[in-house]
Amino acid sequence: MQQVLKKVYEDDTEPAAVCELLVDLDESLQEWRYRHIKMVQRTIGTRRGTGGSPGATYLTTTLASPTFPDLWAMRSLG
Image 1: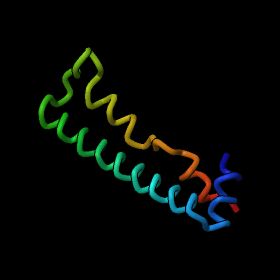
Image 2: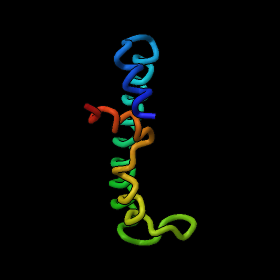
Image 3: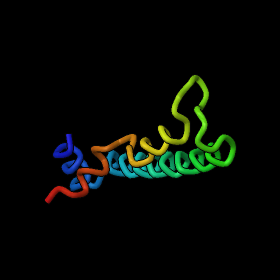
């Protein structure tokens, strides 16, 4: 998949622009996750979250998980 994305970026066409918009969206989602974690910590601290989830402890584990990992990983391709 990353090789396909590399080709899309090399062609520098509209699909490449769409990929960059998806990266922007992904970055915004990661920022939202961070703000959400901070809100949860301020509101309930380390208590369990809704539905019995581990709350902020669980949310913190999702922070570094991009929605579109291939779009980030292909940047490291040589």
